[in-house]
Every structure is written in structure tokens, then in C-alpha cells.
Image 1: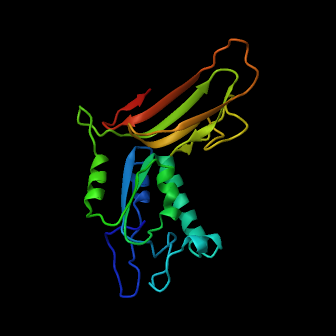
Image 2: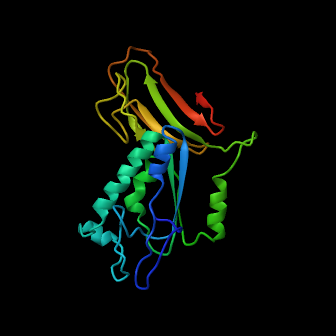
Image 3: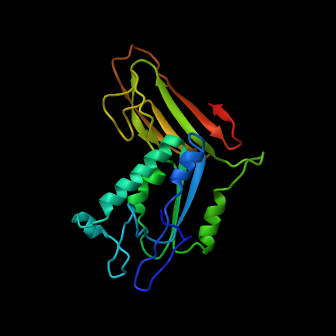
Length: 241
């Protein structure tokens, strides 16, 4: 992914950027919570994640070129970043995108890297702006014990009583691909499963669980929905709630 480090610029060309450390964490920290914080200062111009050519005379894709299916780099780049996202989800790693530039940086192609992993995404004009710095500092808030207010590599399972079915979840997460009798035939949001992966959780994490009636309920019967969440605490301990 693009980043301000290791860049080189030739007059009349876009900056060229390095790739992200997804593979490094995959080798060193597989299935252990970890966070990739990517500071994007320009569009990717090299490799499978390329979203624009090097020469400045060729602008980055716009809404009109996307609508007319005339964005030559978009499909290939999106496929590449979707692949990185799937690997990060599998290993419990979060990908944050901090994008500060006066032009587009390719967040559309990269959207699943932060949507599926529960990462942060921040857009701004400059990394030196006070607004960006204040926003960035909020991600390092700590609790009374000095631990980050974050959890990692979480799995949420939803259990229901007879007569209720789970259609899906709306939120930044990924399907764990686990089915049982409480999974509805219809899907809404991320459905077809009773478990979801959240590579990152914070006190501000919000999601909507969508359920539907799966049959005739007895008169005066009560239904229940239970949420079972397992996660890695910021201090490294595994917890279940």
C-alpha cells in the first residue's frame, strides 16, 4: 500500500510507493492480534495495487470513468486489495488507513482492507494538521489499568431460540462461514453464518444484528438472542463475554 516512507518522485510523475507488511505479519504473527497502520500520502503507481499511472498527465479515475467502465486499473487493484484483506481477516490482523493528500489516494479500491478488518479510516489534507493529530491521538486512549481501549482477533457467535433466525449483521466485520439451524435462508448485510470475525473492537464499535421469525411461535412464547464474543484483550489475555 502507499505510504510516505520510501518514496521517489520524478518531475512530471506521481510518487512511487512501497507495499504493505501484510505478508510480514502473516509470517511472524499468524492468528495473533496485530495492527497495520498505513499512512497513505499518494496513490499507488506500481505493482498489482496500482490505481494510476506514473505520469501526471494521466489523472486518477473519477466517478464518470467508473460509471463508464473506463477505469483501467480499478478492477485489478480492487482484486489485489481484496486478497490482502482476506489474508488479514484470516490471521486476525487489522488494517488502518490514514489518507492525507490533496488528491485521491485509491481508498475506493482499498475499502475492504479496513471494512472487513474493522480498521480505522481517516481522510485529510495533511498529516501535519491539528485536526489529524487530535483524531490520531484518540486511537491510543487507555483504560484505568493503562491498557489500550482496544480488543483484537475477536469472534462473535449469535445463538437464538426456536422460531428465530439470523439474517445477517450490518457493520465492519467478516463472515466466519459457520452455519447452523439458526441461520436464515435470506441474507441481509453479511449473512449466511452465525459467526463473524472482528479483528478490532473498541468501546465505540457498533453493529446491527438482523433477525427474522423462522416459524410459528407458540402463544405467549418468548424468544432470546445470545451474543458470545471471544477476543484478545489489549494485555494479551484471551477473554469471553
